[in-house]
Amino acid sequence: MSKNYLLIYSEQLATDIELLCRNIKAPSNTLFQIRKSSGSVYANIREANYGQSKADMLSKFEIALKECSETEGWLQLLFNTQVINEETFKLHRNLCGRIRRMLIASCKTLKEIQNRKIQNYNKLREFIELSAR
Image 1 (cartoon, helix red, strand yellow):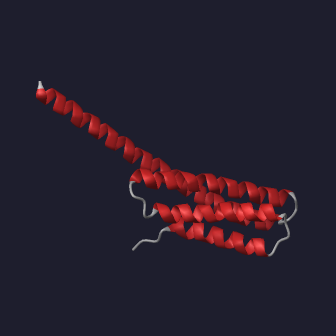
Image 2 (tube, one colour):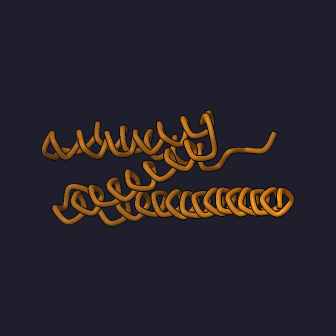
Image 3 (spheres, helix red, strand yellow):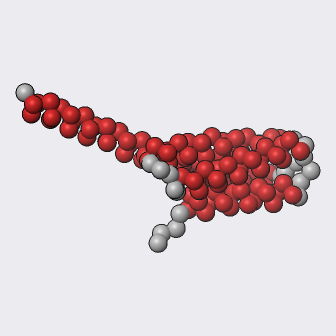
């Protein structure tokens, strides 16, 4: 069985952010928001693996993509306000970036699959219409 790196990286991100939040002093709302967004990345990727359809999977990945961007934003805020140092910021930002790139590629692939299905359906419909004449 091949490894699901997207799931592995998202779990790592959520875990790392939770541990980071336990060890820094920042406004409680900021800590709540970064925990929530990083946890949502993991939860949506996990849910996508059991999607009811390709469209459901795509929807979950797109939500995870937005949440990943939000997590990066909160990391930037923590860095800008000197709550975390540059090394910590870059470590977590790079993990977000890796997840983001994987999500973008996955969304692109799922959209291509959907487009091919639509094209095949349209060709079949045209064939049936021509055959009925």
